[in-house]
Length: 320
Image 1 (cartoon, rainbow, N blue to C red):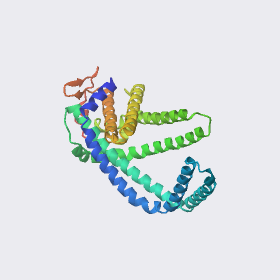
Image 2: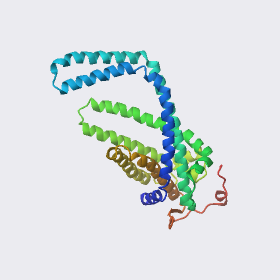
Image 3: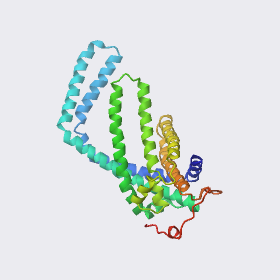
Image 4: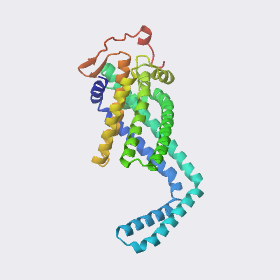
C-alpha cells in the first residue's frame, strides 16, 4: 500500500518537478562555472602531453583499422613515449592533482548541500499538501525553512558523502578484482549495478524517516536522526522492499531516458526521481506515526488506529 499511496502523492505533487528542475539547473550552472574557472589553470598544464598521447593513440588505431601494419611499430613507439611523458608529468604535478581533487570535492559538497535545500523545500510542499491540501510555493518554502534545511543538510550531506565515498572505494577494488579474474564481462556488469542499487537502497531505508521527522514531527536534526534509526513502529523489511522497487524503477527510467532521448529526458526524470523519493519519505512517516493524510483532493488515508496528538504535540512550536 505504501507504494500505491506514494505514486498517488507523487502524481498529486508532480508540479514540484518543474520547480526542482529550475532550481537544480541554477545550482548546476553555478557549480559548473566555479569549477571551470577553479581547475582550468591546473588542467591546462596537462593538455599538451595529454593531447599528444591521444593524438598518437588515435593515429595508431586508425593505422591498425586501415591495415597499415608496416607503420604500427613506429607509431607504437611514439605512443609509448607519449604515455611515459604523461606519467612523468603526473608525478611532477602531484600537488596540482591533489588541489584539483580538493577543489572538486568542495564544490561537489556545496552543490549537494544546495540541492539538499531544494529537496527539503520539495518535501515541505508535499507535506503541506498531504496534511492540509495547501499549495505552498516552492520558493517561499525554501526561504521560510532555510534555517532548518541548512541544519539538516549540514549533517546529512557529509554523512552521505562519506558513505558514498566508502562504497566507491569498495567498488574500485571489487571491479579491479573482477577484471583480473575469470568472471565473464556481463556478470561483472550485473554485480556492479547490483552493488550500486543495493547501496542506494540501504541508504534510503535507514534514513527515510529523518527528513519527515524534522518537517512533520518538528524534531531537531539530531533527535530526528535518532528517531530514524529507532525500531518503534518501523517495519524495516517493508521499507526495504519498497525501496528496492523504487530504486530499480528510478534507475531504469533514468538509464532509458539517457540512451533513448540522448540525455534530454534526464531533465524530467532526475528531478522527478527526487520528488518521488520525498513522497515515499512522507507517506512512510505518516503511516508509521498513524496520521491520516490526503493522497489527492478527494481521498484521505486513515490508519486502522489513528494517533491522536497530545496537547503538547498539538501546540508544539516549529523550533522544537
